[in-house]
Length: 369
Image (cartoon, rainbow, N blue to C red; front, side):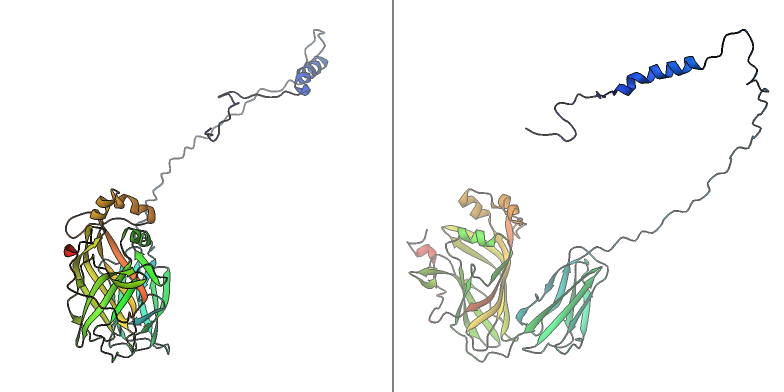
């Protein structure tokens, strides 16, 4: 049964039922009796006791209100309330191994006309630099006049409208003196120290993949760093290169910020279960520990074309993603079935003895779908 507010099944529309008490019935009888007891005797005489002069009063006030309201004051204030709030600070609060030339920023929920962003060193002294509000008013950024100190802590204060936020971060340590050539690191996308900033459905989407590991190997490091990546998979409990996915060979990039670096962007094709899909603008970066035994503060970004995955599963992923708080966006090739990727891993450990073969070709492997 569906109940409709304000209506009761036993109530008749437009009818009000009253309950009458005995006093209601006795009332008329009492009134009639009282009138009968006060009636003048009919003796033919005229009652003059209550005869008075005729009323000669008259209202001679002819004043009429002809005043007109001439108040034409109008509110011409066109200012709008500032309601923007801070939604994120970069580097994130507590982030480590931050580059010494990193730009600090704060992003807003909506455009603002002004904002402040201040960075302090560990002694509480303000870091000298330049603060710039983005042209669209959606963020503010700070660039220090000189590189930050290595292995040092910094704090950030951001303000916009009535919103304020703060955070701390620590810069990278000393440059690694280790020759990293041949070192391979494992980014486990289901690990406890991994955060899926986007898509929020990332942990679910990895269930459709043949593997949840991304291997990153350094081919050389000097003035530039040359890296290659590949999917990884466990075979009998041992992690190795996944033979049914093409490796992703990144172009060499500057390693002047040793031990921190960023590689990409580049477009790459990936295969999973016989389905090939594209990663657009794939970029990743991080910083090595001084001993080279871990790649820390890893961040991987890009756009994933989920169209082929939807076709292979016969499921419209773009229709399901809003259930997780995600949404598809336009791909650079014009498709409307891309999903923004932003994955962060606090630490990808070194995998001793594991190297990536850049010549792996899944099309020649009969075991690959």
